[in-house]
Length: 148
Image (cartoon, rainbow, N blue to C red):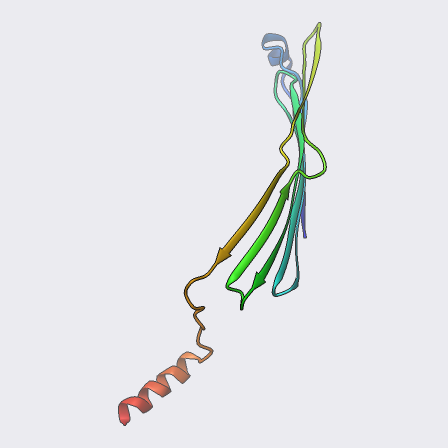
């Protein structure tokens, strides 16, 4: 499991606030990612993110997204079937706020980003087994072969 968060506060000089009408503002983001492997044949993954961005004009936009998936391996791990759901609980919601000295505008829009993905993959060639011999054991085996 992995979680992260960040916060940035933008503060502008009085000159920039008067000349360019800049506004102080903050940016915040957070995310949670996880992977769970109950057996070597099963894999479960997911993530959830929240973002809120600010710019000098006082506009702030934010959104929430999530992703969940499961994967199963069959036939000696040669066939892999995966299923993934993107934004299963809610539509992407974007909130934008723009404000000035004499106005305040808040815009909310929803985008249905729910997606389902089914993946099937099959490995055609044989799995290559890596040698468990040490370098010294390999050299000894080669030396025995060349003596015969």
